[in-house]
Amino acid sequence: MDRLLNIKDLSVHFKLEEGVSKAVDGISLAVGKKETVCLVGESGSGKTLTALAVMRLIPRPGIIAGGEIIFKEADLLCLSEEKIREVRGAEISMVFQEPFTCLNPVFTVGDQIGESVALHIGLQGQKKKDRVFEVLKLVGINEEARVYDAYPHELSGGMRQRVMIAMGLVSNPALLIADEPTTALDVTIQAQILELLSTLKEKLSLSILLITHDLGIVNEIGDRVYVMYSGKIMERGPKNDIFTKTRHPYTEGLLKSVPDLGPIKDRLYTIPGSIPEPFKVPKGCRFNPRCPYVKDICRLQEPVETKVSAEHFVRCFKYE
Amino acid sequence: MQNKNFSIGGVIWGKLKKNKLALIGAGVVILLSILALAAPFLTVYSPGEQDIGNRLLAPSAQHLCGTDELGRDIFSRMLYGARVSLSVGFIAVFISTFIGVALGALAGYFGGLLDNIIMRIVDIMLSIPNLYLILMMITFFGPSIFNVMLIIGLTSWMDLARMVRAEFLSLKHREYVLSARVAGASNSRIIFHHILRNALSPVFVSVIFGVGGAILLESGLSFLGLGVQPPDSSWGIILSSGKDYIDKAWWLTFFPGLAIFITVLSYNLLGEGLRDAVDPRLVE
Image (cartoon, rainbow over the protein chains, first blue to last red):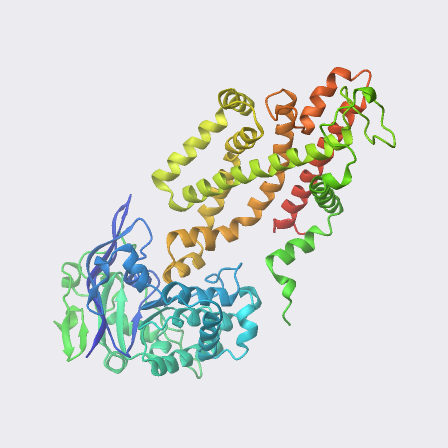
């Protein structure tokens, strides 16, 4: 498969007084052309940091401690600050969780969407406006003239998320990173935004890296899935394999904790315990304190990735 | 459904126009500026025109504010003096705002060593008594309108720098800053476009207060003979030369004093009104 983005052995470390926190601990992840890859995991598992590392925007005191991020044959980690700015917004765009706080309150929507094309393609004046109108229509906003002149607080949450996506797409990027794009929205709007993302992917030959904790979303638009826990990829594979041939106990737990429609039989399953503090990662397999199948070896040794099928891999002693 | 007046400026204006004192202040500020600009059309006598035969005349229809010891028309001198006083006020504040905003923004945005250096300079500047610092610099550079503007500007940017720094410290962590960065915006664009626009209201308020303060400072310096030099006139100079005749000709000191008082008061009223209008916590 043609790979657009290839992350190899990426580590993000935070040097804190308590010690070094390995928030992202040697993960590898690839996104192919026109593929939707989902990165799944609980809050605090390092998903957003992985995405920010791709943009080279790890907040201080974090550092990218190792690895490679190959995008279109270039290692993003080796680019100069100027070169990486040319990638941001133009080649790779990012859409965040909170459409309420991600738009600058003092500029109109048109100004904010237009900024990226002005910076990267140099469009000005009427041409810029035309392009913004075009992309607003593309994300399903029909009153583009009104929205263009509106301030963010004049729009609803769903509208704002569409505006954020428009901002991401206006310079025609090859890869869109969507960080929990629907978490702050209510369910009906969620469905619309997901629908929009799949249509856009087809129309624009876009690759999407979708970060989420919601397996319902993965099921709807994902092609391949990476399950991340405490900075490591625990299981990866095509969506159907992950859902039907689940291997890792953590993935299993995540799947069991999705509520079903229909009559309530039992209390909803929850994975016991919580994700470890990043500088107190347990010895051995980092999931062992919460794992229902824990064995002695899990507490001593870190499992390596084992092959389940051609594209399906798991990191667990159950299968070694 | 769309209300065009719902922009930030619209909201502030909406609150400001309910504040009668601030409106009066704004009115006087505008009126004074017009009077100063239109001085040649409003005066009969030129400000330097001496007429010893008519010296120390009390206010009358010919001389609205009387004449001074050289027979010069006080009204003319005051209108022309307003030009000097107001422009010293504005230009000094322009200089101090420029320095304060730039240094405060850099310190708040980049933090670390740069922040430390800038804030220590601020601490040092603030620990020297202001008047002493100004007098020292004027002695060094010599008194003139230009030097007064420059020196007032160079010695009054510190509070603004602190305030802008504090704004930047909190605003730089907003998510829209991250989303601007993700869109490929450079540091300078983020500082001077995305963040500064959100920090402008307090800057604006401080400019208005600053103009009043600078006018007062200029009058004080001119009164001491360290500001604008005769034959140029400013309110402080008229006041200063009138003090020798205070028992015989009250109008020499009364009118320039009144002008300073009203001007500074108006700027302060407007500034306070604006401060209340831009503060979201003060909703009536």
